[in-house]
Length: 108
Image (tube, rainbow, N blue to C red; front, side):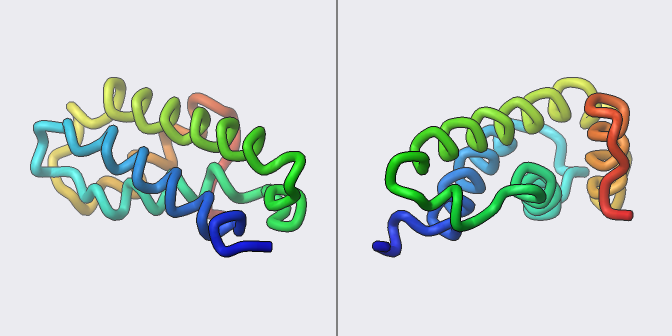
């Protein structure tokens, strides 16, 4: 399996897209690195690296994970970032957004 087909390649591409989406936040009170990290952890938490890297499935996985990451980033950006007062609130804000939106506690 080539490097470009590995789970790390998928994570890198999704992280770049999420970061690109979040860079439009006009709020310096957001820790964008932390935001990308939290979103990636959630998006990839149940992904089996072997299944996601199989030749016949990797593009399906890529687009599904990319879509999920962008949807979370966009939803959080619109619904939660205006309320942030400090960059230290970023992680908790994303976790709360995920819990409210997807009904799952994150990071426990």
